[in-house]
Length: 271
Image 1 (cartoon, rainbow, N blue to C red):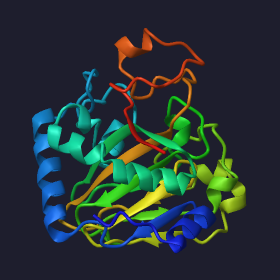
Image 2 (cartoon, helix red, strand yellow; image 1 turned 60 degrees about the vertical axis):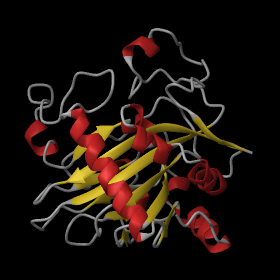
Image 3 (cartoon, rainbow, N blue to C red; image 1 turned 90 degrees about the vertical axis):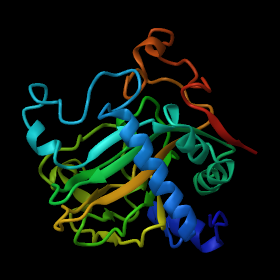
Image 4 (spheres, rainbow, N blue to C red; image 1 turned 135 degrees about the horizontal axis):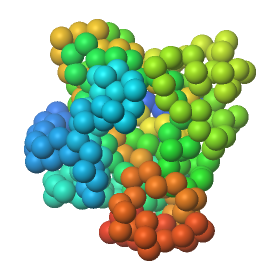
């Protein structure tokens, strides 16, 4: 893996709230990531995350737009908790150091990982923010997004609104069917030119959780697969939002308690 960040990588991230790192994985590493993700996804048998009973495609009746959202992507979370190969990849201290260096923090914990699989002809992923969904507030939180297939303009690559993370906030504008909704919350970015993050398979991006981003529809008969991980700077506390935290954990914590349980949010890097 290409762990070394250049000063240019860090400067671009700080300026724009995202950075693309080409050829992050060597060809043999890419094949290992692909096989590990495929294995972990198959083992889940459609279960979205540990400790929750919801399966892919079973949201009908809860969300009136379930048919639409179920065809945006297949989303499976915290595969590191159920597959040892994914655990080895996600708990990689050197990737944690990359995240810490970009965020400018001394310690990094996993918030959650995600396999994001855009099927052929899948719907767009609307513009949105990440951090407002999470159970903590931190302007430095970020994610890695590893392309397991080429991410192209045609099959649903990511797009970013550069610099937006400096002005967005923790209020959640949601993620709806209409691409324009986030710009109703942040009208100052309506005229900002978005940047497409096309990537070869094996490349990756990092983005700040308050950077506005989205993805195209998949206009092809092929898959667009990605493995991602969201990172929480060490020292954060619970803000009251359940998000991906399991019910038994939620019964043990209250607002203001530190999110430092290594069984749920492992510390993968500390200076």
